[in-house]
Length: 268
Length: 183
View 1 (spheres, rainbow over the protein chains, first blue to last red):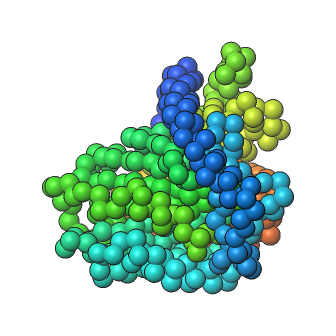
View 2 (cartoon, rainbow over the protein chains, first blue to last red):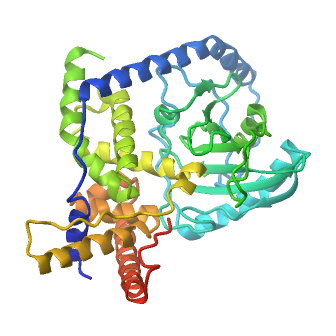
View 3 (cartoon, each protein chain N blue to C red):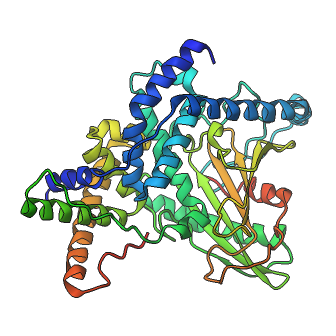
């Protein structure tokens, strides 16, 4: 099969596309609504920004510094800084921060570090969890990474009160996550958390095939533009269980997810 | 957003909606999801419009947003479990003679089905290089990686696609399980 065959195959694959009923006015109306919703979200959080700024500024003014050690991906410190405001774009890498591109080997090594870190962190944050199984960090598939991949992802399955659940954990390199795009258009709720550079989104019942699903995502936005998201599920997405007819409660709180997402041992 | 900016966004959206939807379909193999991805991507572009509208590579910015929107979508577990099969419609192309039509149908069918078996970023690199006809540098910019990575991903993706197509062809000779696509 030649490159020409690939071109031909791709063109042919879309040759019988259904008609496009595209209304730019409707799209703009939807986008305006989204923009208003986001502005309201940011406005609601601004009242708490001052508190966050003060919490960070005071130690700085007093000259309190932190032990930082070697700035390898494994122990890069989490930046403490104010909640992003309306004019701030914290996920865009600062000019001084060169974009990071890791080799597959570096990613695998980092993934192993984070896997161990995550296991410890999960036991601390969810002390009641048993039968914890952390899958190897990977990309398109479990444990699979490629040169230049800008994220690592895994699932951590666990049992709590007799039910099997899991957490999804994603680490993104600087620039791989755009803060303006963190809130999916179909998310039920998106809010900035008060105490740190984190934002959480709530997706609920989006899948009409299974309205019992609940997903809560918390992003920790690092000052260097990297990000870590931790996703709580009220089911085990790694399992093969039958669809439930009842809705289980979300087994982790937003605070617990935020604590995991802000763990300095996680991140790229 | 100012009225003039909104007008320019409308023009951009109208001009690129169809091509973004086509790329999205090649990524995901589902026209409904492709339309959803296109809409989501354009809404995200709208949010950044005042900042990006004068960018020379505006179309590629749209492709970047689309790619990220799709990759994000794939990371959502329930979506992942939803798309386990891609039934590619088999519709004869009346513009060609039957023999050529059969060949075209085979090429279309097997290449896209093979594509859908590739890991997402390999899928993306082939769509950007061979469907959108982007250069290596443009593809690197869209995917947010180096040109070297684009070259190696392209070579690997072509190898994987060839192997996948060969397997699909063999399966079709073997019987009714042909055409099952696992993503």
